[in-house]
Amino acid sequence: MTMDARAQHKQADRLVLWGLVLFLAGLIVGLLVPHAANPRMALAAHLEGVMNGLFLVVLGLIWNRLVLSGALLKTAFILAVYGTFANLVAVLLAAVTGYGGMMPLAGGKEGTGIVEAAISFLLVSLSLCMIAVCILVLAGFYRRTNA
Image 1: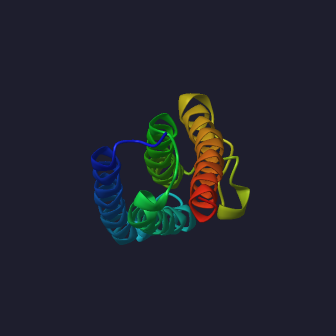
Image 2: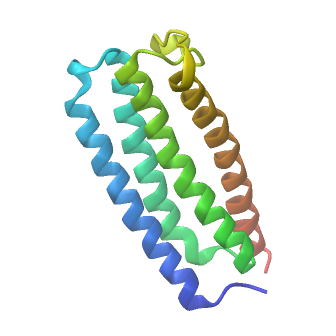
Image 3: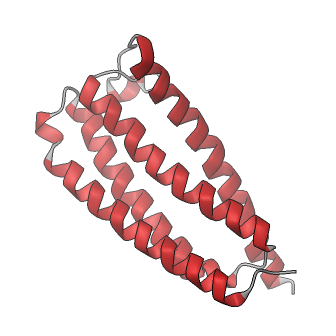
């Protein structure tokens, strides 16, 4: 059983809207790159915002083609929005503080206390969320091709 078409269209529109908001946030972060404690991480945050914003827009554009139950669509929607915004927040927090021990290639240094814990939590949780979203979207699209 699939979700009511009207509700699915509404979710699709919201994904596009949130994607555009995230894209704009990524552009604004790009203006702040030279002023960050870790400019390399700020550049990564800029790219995360822009790419994740585009991901949400594309997801919104294909959303109505997915064949999933209402509960799975809602789950995928929540995980996608959380994962994409958490990505920007985690990397931006690392750029501002200079912390981010889980991202040594971007120059993140092991921090102490709540900031490092928050960055680590966001990175791990968003990774799991985005893997789940990709699996759900692939399954929903696969079901459409075989319907």
